[in-house]
Structures are given as structure tokens and as C-alpha cells.
Length: 218
Length: 218
Image (cartoon, rainbow over all chains, first blue to last red; front, side, top):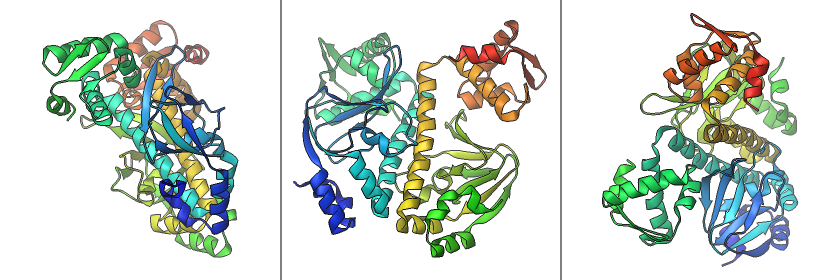
């Protein structure tokens, strides 16, 4: 599949603009675990995900983390090009969670096209709106939901992303997604186990009753 | 002062677009306490604040609240026109905290100009970036900072907004700003009082040592 099919707004650009974009864009393989963006000093460019999975998170000075959102195939990452907008003044970290492929649009190139094309500028605003919606959802979760409900929702989400009920994930990793302490996750997972919702084995969590986990989150 | 001076991006529109905007915009007085936007069903239009003060917050189904950000003179509120962007899918509430004046740009009019003008579309994205930055700051506060430090920062901010050290605000209102319980605020204010940081009187909080409160937040 070509870049165009992953970046449909391209059809709204002029022939010349399309040509500039086509020439400037670079397809990159990004190995699992690679940190592609850390803080507002980095400005790699816009990322159009061809395959794989990325995680956007923030971290405290003490090393605590919380996941903001994930990016999958066909998602576009604007914040890896944060220098194109001066109002974006926050530090997020974006990491490949799986071996991934992404097209990189250089920031200067994208900025110059955005300055010319109302369609592209509006598209960019829509992408930011999508991330804004995800982050607002997160605030509501943090503010109004208990950690057990958030853990239940997270386990269901992981099953759906991975397409399996046997999750290879550590308690520490889950804590970093949810922004809580490892001990809290361990305690709750043990409680979930006594309730027959999950089975815990070394390095694995097997989801036994996804339906009841989903119910917990409603 | 004219609308143009509060909405400088206007200079980048064509004469015809400027004329359309000038004709469509409406100056409104908004009384203190008025809820001008509640949830994504409302779509009053873009708000350009001429004077006064607005508060954007979210609320849980149980009535708990947390302030997302405030809007002051010359700020532009995009989310009162959330229908102009389909990716904005969250419910926030925007209330006048003081008697205010604002120009309202009707959503359809704004959308049609945004579709024509790259400058206006980029400006809109920048406004969203500014709010995104404020909301990311809030997440960091909620996640990594204790409530006593957030309360200290809030009191200093109020002193600076109101231009006085005698704050007329209830413990309940502070709790709604910070997203915590009234009891927590009362307990901490009493502790601040024993430390000589504030003096509590009926319906008032007098800040005695702003420098030390500011220090708490660093």
C-alpha cells in the first residue's frame, strides 16, 4: 500500500504540493522499544503509522509514568513534530511498543504545506482534536474512576489489542500505563484472581472472565 | 477597542472574509454565573473574550468537578464551537466567573472561513495547542503533585488574578477547582493556618505568606 492511501488528505493538495510531499516523506522501520520522541526539544516530524504500535506517555522526575494514548496502523502522530506549532509546550515521550513501520514527514516540509493549504491545516487541527479527546477521557478516568475499574478496562483493552487472553505483561508495566504503583497493581490482580477473573503465572496474566471485567468498568 | 484588535489573525484574511466576519460577529454581555457551554451538544460559537473571566471544567455524574483552565481578556474559546470539528468529542462546561463581555463568532461562519483560509485554520490549531498544553499541565499536577502543593499554587494564582490577598472563596469552591473533597481542602487550610500561611475567617481566606506558599509548589 502506498503512502497516499495512509494519508488521504493528500488528495486535497495541489499536484505540486503532492509531489513535494511524496519526495520528502521517508519510510522508516522502528524497532520495538525505540524512543522516537522525548520532550519538546525533539522534532523528528509527523509520523504516519504503517504497521506496529506506539505508546505516548508522560513521566515524572521520580520516574513514574502514565500512558496518554496509543497509536496504531493509519494513526498520525502530530506531537513528534511539536516544533511546527509554538503553542505545543509540553513534554511527552513516544515509544514503539512493537516493531513498527512509519512514514516520517519532515517538520519544515509539513509546516510549509500547512501554511499553504487550508485543507491540511484543518486536517492537522482534527488530529489534535482526536488526541485532545483521548487525553480528556484519561483525565475523567483518573479523576472519577477507581484504580480497580481502570485495571479491569486496561486488561480488556490489552486482550483486544493483542488478540489473546494470555497477556505477557509485568505488573510494573501495567503500573506505568495506569500511573499507579506496582504494589497497587499486584494487590488488585491478586484480588481479581481470588474472584476468578484472571489467573496469574510467572510473567503472564490470563484473563478468564473478560465479560465480568468489562462489567466492572460500566 | 474594536473586535479586530482582539482577533489579530483577521489581518490575514481577505477583504471579503474580513467583511463577512465583521458582519457576523456579535458582542454579548454575559452575567457572572452564566453557563455558556455544557457538553458537546452545545455549539454557541467561538468566544473572543473582551473583558471578564471564564472557567472551563468537567464534572462527574456524582457532581464532582475539576477546573481545566480559565479564560481572560483576549483569550479565544474554541470549545464553545466544538461542532466545527468532528474530532472534539468530550463534554466540558464553561461558565462566566465574573460579569464578562465576549464576541461570539457563529460556528457555521467560522467553519466556512476556516475551510477557505489556511491562516485561520492554523490559528485555530494553535488555540487548541494552547488548551492542550494547559490540560497536559493539569494531568501532571494531578498525577505527580500532592493536594497541599496544588492548593498552595491555587491560592497564589487567585491572589494574582484578583489582585488582593483577601480571597472571597469557599472551601467547596476550591475543592471544585482542584477536583478534591471539601473536607480535604478544609483540613489543609487549617494546617496552613497553624503554619501562619493563611488566616481563615467566615467566607474569606487571607493569604499571609505568599512567598512561602509559592515555595511549596517548587
